[in-house]
Amino acid sequence: MMRLTPPSATPRARSGQRAPHTLHELVTAQAVRSPRAVAVRSHDGRSTTYATLLERAHALADRLLDYGVEPGAHVGVMMHRVPDLVPTLLAVSLTGAAYVPLEPSWPAERLRTIVSDASLSLVVHSEDVAVPALPGVRTTTLPEDGGGTAPAPHVTDRSAPQGAGTAYVMYTSGTTGRPKGVVVPQTSVTAFLHALGDAFPLDGTDRVLVRTPFTFDVSVMDMFWPLSRGASLVFPHPQGHLDPAHLTEVVAGHGVTAATFVPTQLNAFLAAPAVSDCRSLRRVFSMGEALHPVTVAALWRALPGVELVNAYGPTEATVVTVLHRCRPGDTSRARVPIGRPLGQTGVHIVDPRTLRPVPSGTPGELILTGPQITRGYLGQPEQTRRQFLPDTFSAHADTTDLAYRTGDTVVELPDGELDHLGREDRQVKIRGNRIELGDVEHALLDLPRVVDARAELRAPGPGGPATLTAWVVVAPGTPDTGTELRRALLRTVPTAMVPDHIAVLDALPTLTSGKLDSARLPDPCDPAGQQSAVSRVKKIWADVLGHDDFTDDDTFFEAGGNSLLLLRVRARLAQEGHPGIRVLDLLDHPTPSLLAAHLSRRTSPEDLS
Image 1 (cartoon, rainbow, N blue to C red):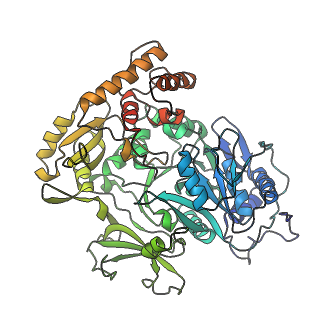
Image 2: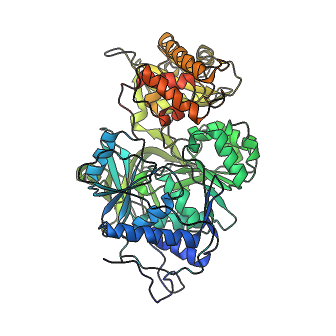
Image 3: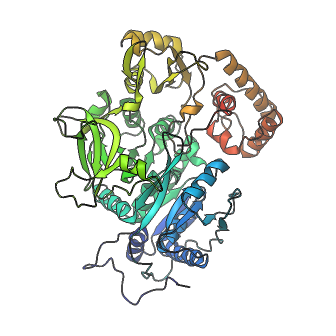
């Protein structure tokens, strides 16, 4: 059996040698430079040096080799967002295999679909994760971490199999509902990390919050941007990304200097009472959804001086390809631009029918080129051919280079930056008028005190006419109702753009990635049914907590609950006809109103994007 043994030569990252082009080479090079520096910190005070991190990764890689993992294989990794995740992913990279993220909270059928699609024969998981039956697949738990704060005395560059290969296969939901596995080469990941590190330098004084679930490609940035530059990772509680109060404690208590948020969760973080204590923050990245000017203003009110970066990038183009450093004028724009290309990324605005460039200032489809473009979709050649084209757009493209059709409509602004206008699939026709749902959301966000908004077409029942519906979050303490907001909107936009129904929520529901979960938006057309469901949830809470001094929009923990009492809530729900509820569901829907909406929708297919 092959072993990853130390070579006699010094590390290949030295002057005169090629730059690292795999994840493990990037981290190895940094560990050689700063072996005693702290690489990983946990919310509970534990820490691991770069040297110890690398030693553990090699030990885990040897274990994977014992299981027959070979270069080019796909290895499933099923873990919560915990410090042990980092050496596990590095270990897979060291063997020359690619990791496939598996979220423990996913339904068993989705897990089986991905396991089959990715041809997984081995799934690595931590002891706290229960793996469902996966026919033909071996599973192995991680050995106990014997590491700690003590640094290893020396780090060598233990060679892994030659060739860059695939770094990971990241699954996203397709329009047909079938998950699509995006094949991401090591060279695309390292091209991204080199470009990001050059644009946003880090050093040993930086501490970066790891709050993104690793089934979302932003996690690659969260973990490996810092590790390639000598900074420390800071892990909150595995479910802490759902609790803004916990995140503020971790940021303030551990001196976090940089963090990444989806705008929906950034709004929740900024609404936390202790957010002003997060004075160590120097930079925040917003990505995954459109960043609204109202969020920019809210960040700078809470944390003056923090650099805010609006980052854009589909999974198919390796995390981030275009970004904009926010400026004071962004708070008064209609939209925050997505900015300029990162690194060697090429941006091309074309007519979506002819694929020919459009004149400057004319909207068109965004096509991306450059080293960050991935290899397409695993086992889906037709879909790959539709979205990935030969790169005939770049002046110096090789015959094997690919371009990616994003499906996003953008326009070049006079200063050369890109403005994201939306997607064709968000254009709808209502009452004979074609409107862009994003424009409805922007109009809502222009109203005083509205901090977040979502608009959709919803049908009240099978065969019923679709109505324009909106959900908004207003500033704490604001008494605005949906009717009042609708009246205000009628004074500012055409009637066709005014939603028939507006629901006011304490927060928009999100997926584990932090993106909006449209499937869990409550039905504003059924206030009586919703209120009845809320009352049933509040009755259970009151019985478990021993008091009813809480509102529809208070979280369970704000009402005095704790994790043990949350288990009792789950047991009560099971007794009352909801046996499949998980603790994660209760954390994802922390208020009576959000939990009631979730319970009423559990018979609908879950949005698994």
